Image (cartoon, rainbow, N blue to C red):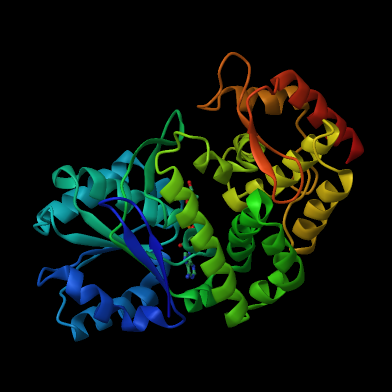
Length: 368
Ligand code: NAD
């Protein structure tokens, strides 16, 4: 069992990682349930995992009702928030109670936000079931739903009380979702850890193929990195936490261009976005072309999009830059960009003109 603490004054919690953990989770959950029931919110693809969790809770004397939402991004909505909060209130949820979020980033973000606002803030536990959620979204307390105006625009910072990660749950995850989550694993190497990027190059294929040791190693490494970053900058005020957005500004434009559809799922857009951020950095003389090539080559070898063509994007630079101009961080035609001086040397640049980004993307389109 690997336990990684997230050190936040008054809001600290543990992330526990262990293969097979879900079947034994009742032992860790019963003490925090404190004699109260623990409602579980999950999505309809996770019925077997829900049953396993309910059994271990029952074995430890914890009652649990299930609230099942439809799978997919559409569940991060006001309508589903309304449904889930109504059901939780009908179950008699109290402020000191814990709701369990069993699922990927969609369930985690929805339940986290519901917990943030129910009874002015009750508790929740993350049991992430996708690689993306295990290495990123379940840790750090960002919660949100989507609105007509865009993704994640209504939400709150609300930290969970505990995160339980069972890497064995990835066994049933569709391989496309697994690869998309792997992009977020690679991201931690690119941000500030060149040795971890080298590990991804040598051992990432084992993780994707299902090797249990490789999965535990990568998840623990990623969670420790995220815990460090969140402890340094919980609310993204100093710029440290913004490093986690590497690849996201380019990626967001690609997602917007594909209508946030399953033509390009989030982790795939992040993969292509990271490759573009490195090539853009190389085009500005910030990092070597060799480093940018290394990033693209590893993403390609991992079966991930690594340029506009492999992301299925044919739009011109101006169209993509226009999506970036709508980014919530844009100010006066400039958007803060995560650029790199090399692998493991990402930094926040505030002097990037969108017109330059558009020219770069036009050149990328011609080269494809
Ligand atoms: P997801 O939650 O939609 O899950 C992907 C699909 O996999 C779903 O169909 C789900 O039913 C299925 N699934 C989940 N676990 C499974 C399993 N073990 N076996 C079989 N199928 C399984 O997607 P995701 O990629 O986990 O999360 C994406 C969301 O996360 C986005 O809404 C994004 O905005 C959010 N996100 C949040 C943060 C944060 O810090 N809060 C960070 C990154 C992403």
